[in-house]
Image 1 (spheres, rainbow, N blue to C red):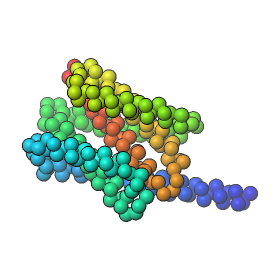
Image 2: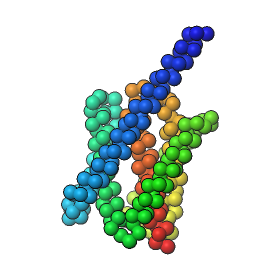
Image 3: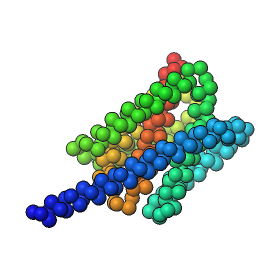
Image 4: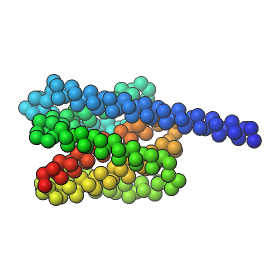
Length: 225
């Protein structure tokens, strides 16, 4: 009986330590993102305006880091450096949008609303995912199919621009999709191996980053009506 209690407590301590690592690196990612936005808006925004192709280079670097994360995510300290670099680059890519929006009439109000809405929705869905007794693992296939569908539609939208109504629909679906991803990923935290904390933090960071982007796009489209 005492052995069982000890094992249970030890398991709980391991999970708490793992969760603490994930949250710590999640905080690092948020900080690195803010630094990326600040540095780009302060020193490099003109370069992206003059040379738009630079944004594709940065975005390509992001994709390489994401798709190669399984290779480097367990290699200390490389994983920590590349994880922070990825978050920094996401700040760089979103900085031009934030800069344009901040300079437009009512843009700052939209940004504040987007940040508040993101914080509220992310916290709410994270708590649901962490505390629910329902097994959310069955959502995996649906979420992946939804993500692939959103990527395909987004690529099509580059070549065939759509109207404001379609933008609202697309953004609204994106908000729902990444809210669901947040629930799924927070429940999944309970099942990660101990050495996969970078993978877990990366998943959660991508959830909140994409959730913010889609909420921001939704608010912008609603403001155009």
